[in-house]
Image (cartoon, rainbow, N blue to C red; front, top):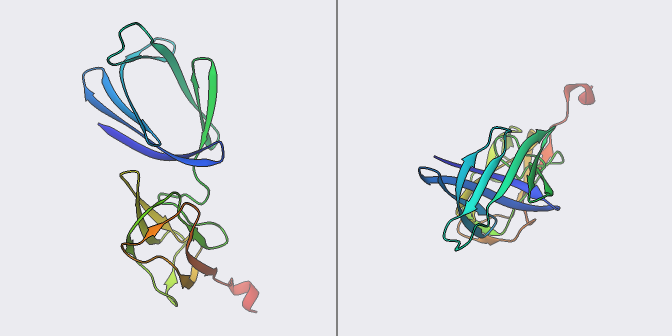
Length: 175
């Protein structure tokens, strides 16, 4: 079993994944750091995590809870707030203004649009590989592609504009 999600922590994107290795042993990746723990569920909703390979007991208890559109994690007395990146709806990168940005530094795996294409708000425009994860970046708004800066096989920096979609005019605005 493996789960992967991208969050924003302290204003910066961070990829988080957890994979069960066997039994109570888990491998957790937060950004570019990898940890291995033995996990034990507690009756109060917490999880006791013990680092694998430690010579002495450095276990700690962690709690997690949804808080509106955010997720709160409390570890060792410190609370971390994690939020989904803006413009995410199954994919990512698309903002309400139609600007598709790279969520983090990575490699462009595919460009699925060209200038002049009519696209839907949830349509994938660019696929980026970053931190061993594939990120499908969506338009964010329905409209017409005005520019495409992403090139298949190219490297992009975090925040780079990969495509711009001009939002479609509503029928009311046309009359």
